[in-house]
Amino acid sequence: MVLTGRVLSTSRRLLLGAALSSAALAGCGLLDSDPEPEPQPDPLQPLLNEALALAAAYDRAILADASLAARLTPLADDHRAHAAELSRVIGTAAPSVAPSSSAPAGAGETTATLRKAEQAAQRTAVAACKAATPERAGLTGSIAACRATHAEALR
Amino acid sequence: MTEQLAAALAAEEAAIYAYGVIGVHLKDADEVSRARACELEHRRRRDELVDRLDRIQASTAPAPPAYQLPFEVTDRESALKLAVHVEDGVAQTWRALLPVTEGADRVDSLSYLTDSAVRATRWRRIAEVTPLTMPFPGRPG
Image (cartoon, rainbow over all chains, first blue to last red; front, side, top):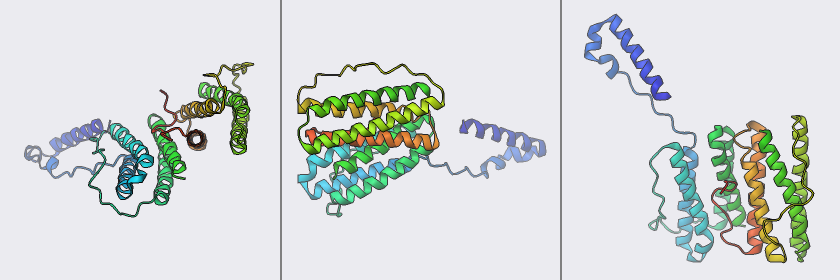
């Protein structure tokens, strides 16, 4: 849709240019000097960034304390599943979703800080669901609910 | 939206019935009171759905006199399994309301989806079932 709109307005400008001065058109100066508008980030991009950041935070917590692995790995996997699905919907290349074994350990993640992060992330997802198109309402809603279950699982 | 509201009503009715069965098989006082609290919440939602369907003057199929449980409930273990199953099922029907609602109605549907997903996680922890969570609560299949 957006692409079609831009093509149309470009051809309109081309016509206008041709009417005013065929010389300007020949040099294509009109088109070259027209800066491309900055592409708007997808409204789900913050949700995707958050999913990746949370997955990485769990990885760091597990690296710092291996005894947490059984409890935290499924939660990190949920975030990776969210990131993969969000990338697909946004249409960006799938981010690296492999566990980052090289993540710096000792960044201070505890189940308490992770729980806080999940609660904040849940609020982001609720807002995203509220603003989402019908096609995206289910996905964002499930992500919000999942983040709430993570906060519960970390109790 | 009537169709999705009717599905949510059917799921809430089934949940109320199921918690009656679940309660019979739980002995621990804390577990019994949790089940009771869940039942009350589902009754509250059921009443709200009935009102909502009344307001849009939709007639729904009357609740069946008895429900078919998805599996036999004979002890604490199967009772806890049913509680997880019920909350997962209810979550699915509320998720289906998200695309057909907006604004405050959508936020309400999301809060019920979330509430049921959190209850399912609590029951899994009590039943010592892992993982405690699923990536996409309410997504069918």
